Amino acid sequence: MYLQPRDTRHVPQTILIGGSAGSVEALGQILPALPADFAAAVVIVVHLPANSPSLLVDIFAQRMALPVAEVHDKVQLVPGHVYFAPPDYHVLVEPEGELTLNDDPPLHFCRPAIDLLFESGADALGKKAVGVLLTGANHDGAAGMAALAAAGAMTIVQDPADAQVPLMPSSALKKTPVNRVLPASAIGPALAALVHG
Image (cartoon, rainbow, N blue to C red; front, top):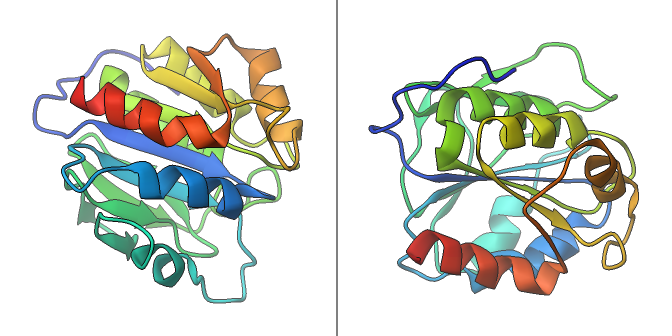
């Protein structure tokens, strides 16, 4: 939970993206739109089966201009890099600008949980965070978007009318006002303009 402003001068602007059912397709519209000189780090949580390896790095490494990797414990955020949460681990943003993994119990039946990424990002990054919540079939991410908004972060939610499964973005919109509601096709260009503007 966001508690107080932190000194974030030493950490990069960071885009925090969460999604569930249908989000791989949405990311397929968003991530290729980020330019090679994109100056923010990107951390992504997609709900995945716990017992299967993730193929997201392999899928997106071929489709975008930025380097892509799976999160490893204690990895330092680097501008212009994209990090995917591994299956069966929560990803947290630490105040020192690093990502950590933990195996605490699932939240909303999910591990990794979007709320934990967003809430830790709100606490660690404050206004340097940008939260993006995509299509999905449960309420994960709604509380996290509220925490990001309270921390002064930019918040973007996929338009429920554009979402393959609208429950997740609709839940966030019911819980807190957000800065922008956009179709997936417009989110990548909006992020590029925000980071470079």
